[in-house]
Image 1 (cartoon, rainbow, N blue to C red):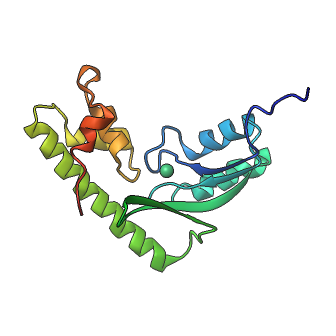
Image 2 (cartoon, rainbow, N blue to C red; image 1 turned 180 degrees about the vertical axis):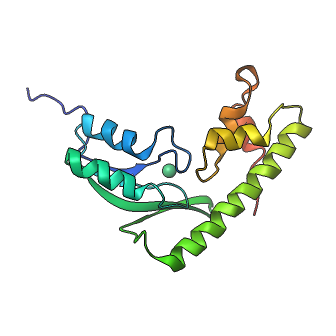
Image 3 (cartoon, helix red, strand yellow; image 1 turned 90 degrees about the horizontal axis):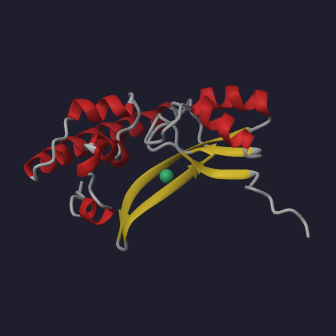
Length: 164
Ligand SMILES: [Zn+2]
């Protein structure tokens, strides 16, 4: 019987510290390379800021990086996450739009922090920003800022979904 491959050679959906992932782009690419990935899309939310670093690391490890981004939007069926591939990181018009989306994310997170505080959860915006390390803010940063014993279940966090 043929050995089953431990993973896929292509990973089309990854997030680094530039949005809500846990690793810097270079470490993310190194980890993918170690898993046998040859083609990796860096699809951070609302930013292409990690692409150059990922490409630089990937070129030394035989991993081709596809510049990508993930945009959250709403549809008649609910939240929709749209992935865009082969995006030009030098497109200034797109970057202006992505910057607007990132600022909007910041405002949404501020509102969520206020709502959590009102519910009795001791969350500080400063701590959320510290965890995000300058990346596009997301709910995972908020979740990680909660004291371990007070983390919300996914069902509970669903109750603080906010409309734009
Ligand atoms: Zn994603």
